[in-house]
Length: 383
Image (cartoon, rainbow, N blue to C red):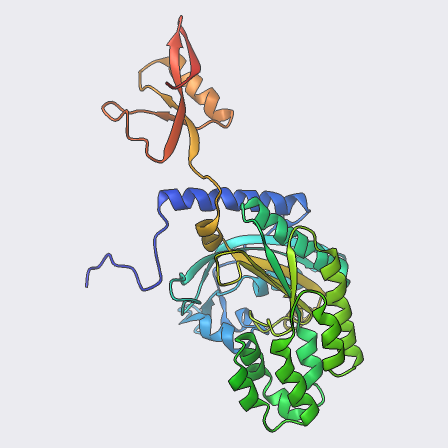
């Protein structure tokens, strides 16, 4: 085997792709900052138990593990940044009011999520802590839609779900509670035969309600159907009311209700949402409320957020990432050096063509040229 081959579903990011990813990263982080989100940079490596807080079996299976040669304890390479940001809010910042945090960094998965998916994603996202009301959920959803718009993705469909519906359906039946994670996976995968198998021995009311969840998909009118086909408990009524409010407030996307769309990690506790675009089978962004994650760090806080894989978004984004640049000659000339430095300080990309390589500029669109006119260096359109 060649020593330079990379592991399966691991790939280098080459200049054209890297330029596009970086352009989108800057756009999104600038938008997060415009909303008041502060950036944090958690480490790639942590003690395993910290990374797996409330993450369920799925997160555990996706996390690479190794032994720390200094402490002898098991470490993990993060597969999701959200628990790390929750740790920072709960354990390090320890603020009393609302805290808005954002991040961008690589995550590693033991297995790819799809046939051609990478195991090394670039996860970017935003989280808001300290407010339990729907105002925070609405802000996060709008920020996510803004991010997708900045990436040039049109005709976004926003699917809304609520983790509280499943929790309420199984809460009073021990058998159903014991099947919680298996039910979660069956519903998330729309695996109707598996769902029928799992619910066969449950009480009829619980069984029938769980089996109807995959059929409760459609526009906001499906909420009325849900009210008639699901048990009339206060918890379910409140969850459906939350979804109705958010569906009415969303601007810039088609809104659908999918009461079985429970895909993602298992720490969600309230409203969940997924964004889809035409031509892409999987969600391009996901998020939701996760009020209980901070408990493991000694300080439970209301929390909601979203994240997306920047590499996947860059792959489908129509954003043009080829840089406009100024082509300058290479000469031992103090005035030329001063002009090039001034242009770069002003934010321009200036490429000095090395002798014999005037045309090696595939990655840049040199639409202007720096030329000497009457003893001064000036920028002109390139013919």
